[in-house]
Image (cartoon, rainbow, N blue to C red; front, side, top):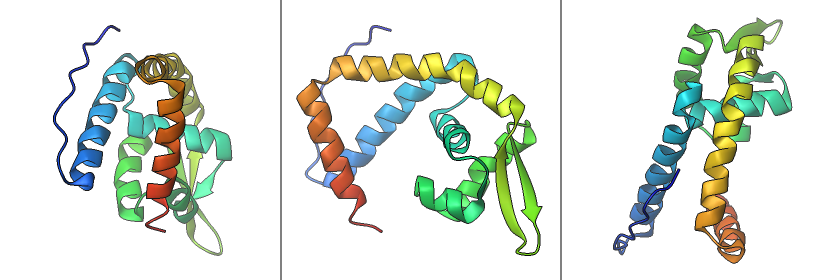
Length: 145
């Protein structure tokens, strides 16, 4: 996918710049993943469940650093279409999130599109920019723990 890159004037506010960048990258990944039927947020949730196995809501919330209420809201459509299954574990009554076979199949279908998006960003940025970018993101994530 050949896309023209237009550099925009940054804001004085770091938060505004991060939010703009985040929206642009999310929209880009969503567009690349469109043929798979998944959005990047859904892809990420399914991929975490594939890698880590069934997790409680609290565990999944911590792993992906997403507020529990937002996680529940994001899981509902996935559960409705059968990509995840949520069970209640006794005696703790913790809700356990499982990736279903259908969810695994959807994820497998999406992987080539995700790889294509990754490749495009790897071509847009230099190796040094990617290294610095990851380091900056890691620092920024540590300010809110």
